[in-house]
Image (cartoon, rainbow, N blue to C red; front, side, top):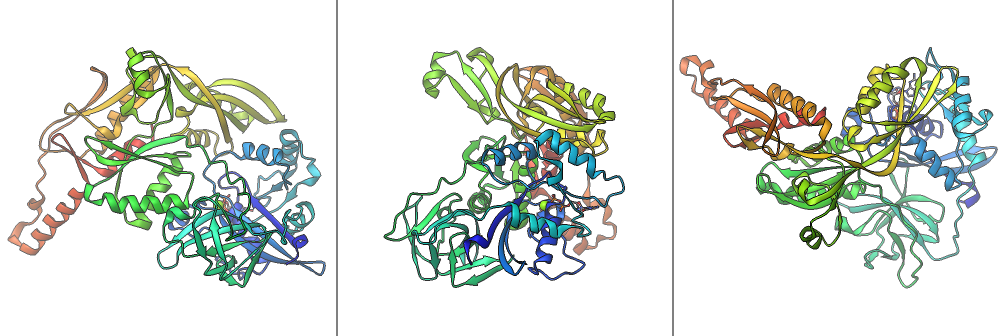
Length: 577
Ligand code: GDP
Ligand code: MG
């Protein structure tokens, strides 16, 4: 395939704006998949993606398209919708001097107003409004012009086929039977079956067993040439061997490795432990495989007295954490305990003893258990982000109240047309990770959009809050909170725990505490639960079944002191604040 006829592109937009649906239409238009009624988010292959209707993993597809007698190869990457960072992504693309094609979707909706959106795009991004393409991905309206624009406005990749091979590993998956399948983009050279290749990262040599293109399923080919995107299988057995961002080159033809990727910065951390310590090794290998698949998750070993050996994982956000957990359960049958998510706080140490221990004055706290006491620090710092909200004017008042309740400071407010406002706020990160997006959507009937970017750290008065059940600390729920929020958050957690704890043979006191000071309390009354009471008549098999079911139920319980806590009680408590 001549390089002049190759184009690489991806679709970037907020969750739900129709990226996967547009990808479906592009696959159909180019004959990559058959046109049927039920092509719905074809590239979303994972169970969790189908259930939640979001793209978790970016999928690649190579499309062949005929235009004015020439055949083009278009490599499409459908992007995941986990981060609300479209505006920030636009500026990244702009700085990298990539071509940007503005596409306005959902013009079939009754209240769609594409002209107004064009004007907003011109105002916010400085893109002339006549460059916008107005489509309905759902109905297929005008989708062909997107393909035309990809050919006309995006330049062919700058690659050199005569140079020795340089292939970038941009994704990889693990197949039980075939080992690691690396998705590669070729910048230079050619690779064929039988070639000996070397990983720049590990310096290990492999023989290529198979190369091919993603169509969107794997389709073996004889060779892959520079400018192409495809997959490669080379007998890598261990998931650690195919790191995303690695460069592959030919044995005896070493090259300068490609710059790779700037790794995504985790924003939310949580502890993860096996429900049963005998499951530790299984869970370890499941986490390794999933992180190979999703390199934005960071993993550190951790342990706790109550929960045993486990890990502290870093995620891009709460949805990312939930999806990761769900994938562990669905794809690896793992059952885990998750602790309260926390953001990376910092503490400036005053005690010279501690400074010696940590070898530095400023430490990052990703585990509330390691939160240093106030007597040992000069100040605490919390991460902040610059958030951009675009909303119809009628919701501005309510949104400003929401932002203030989240300790946000307004930085800017402009009208981007007659009735749309763009608000900029500096938010403490921990105030938006949990449920800010949902609250914003619900109070603006879904119309407000939200975007944020990293903005460093600010001083904050932080305290560590414990949740106690009959006087015993619940390790999963230890959390760091802002002093002013401790009471309301503590109260809310106690109330939610009360609702999700089943009554037991004795009374349960649920308390929130800062040090030895109790700041909130709820009580669950005693209740006698007799499973066998239902089985009158002495039907022994029925009795056995009930006892067995209760024993299975116990596996999903955690004992804290004498109190039994169902696993899903924690999840319910963690989900909102
Ligand atoms: P993504 O999160 O950006 O990948 O969005 P999806 O492609 O999953 O689409 C989100 C929702 O919007 C789905 O319910 C789609 O059916 C719907 N949708 C996508 N494109 C259109 C469109 O052009 N018109 C209408 N009315 N709905 C659309
Ligand atoms: Mg999608």
